[in-house]
Length: 270
Image 1 (cartoon, rainbow, N blue to C red):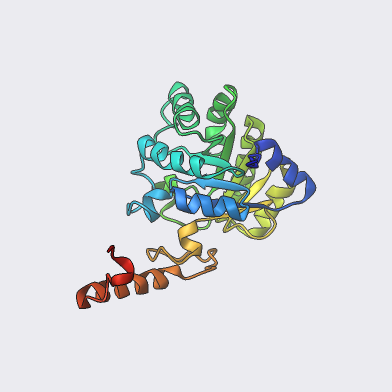
Image 2 (cartoon, rainbow, N blue to C red):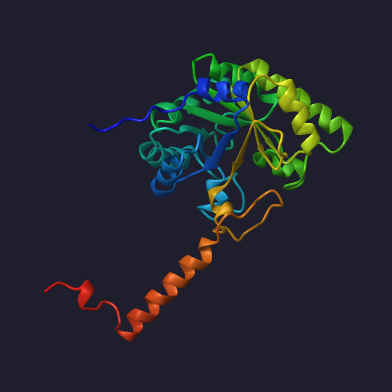
C-alpha cells in the first residue's frame, strides 16, 4: 500500500519555532528540483520571483508576471508531497489596490495550487496582508532588502545599518505580524537586528543574509549548486558545483557526436 506523506501546514511551521527547530527553505521553479528537495525533507519550498533572474535571465525580478508565477508554481506543487509550497506575488500584482491583491493571491492558491503566498513590504503593506489573510490565504511577509524595491534602495544593499533604518525594519516586522502574516523573510540585514526581531516576534523569521539567529534560512537553489554565475552574494554558501559537472557532460556529448562514438551499439536498436 502506497504511503501518502502529510504536507506541512503553516501551523506546523509555527510549531517549529515554538519547539526551537530550525526551518529549512529553498527556492524551486520546476518539477525535478522540487521533487529532489521534497524527497530530501525540505520544510518549505518557495517559488520565488527570483525565477526572473536565475531562471529566465531577466536583469532583476521586476518583469516577472502572474502568469509566469502560476506556470512555475504548478509543477512545484505536483512534485511535492510533504513540503509547504509558498508562491511569490510578483511586482504590481498586489500594490495597485486591495481587490487586485486579493484576486491575484487567490489565483496562486486556486490556479497554481500553492498553500501560501509571499509578498514584500512592511508597514506600507500591512493593510494588504490583512486583506489577504482575511479571506483565509496565508501570507509570508518579506522585509529588509526587498528586491522589488531596488530602484528606491539604489540596488541590492544591506538594510538596517543606520539606527533610523533599523527602527523602521523593526516596525515593519511588528506590523506584518499584527497584520496576520504567518512568517516573515528577513533579507540582508545585520545579524544583531535579525536576532532582535526574531526574539520580538511570535511568528517564525526566515533569514537570507540575516545571520544565524533567525528561526529558519532560505537560499536560492541555483546559488547553492553553483548554477548561477550572474552574481555571488556574501550570504550564499555553495554546497556543490554542478555547473562544471554539467558543462563537462555537455562537452563530452558534443565530442562523441562529432567523432561518431555516440551512439554506439549499446544505445542503438537491432
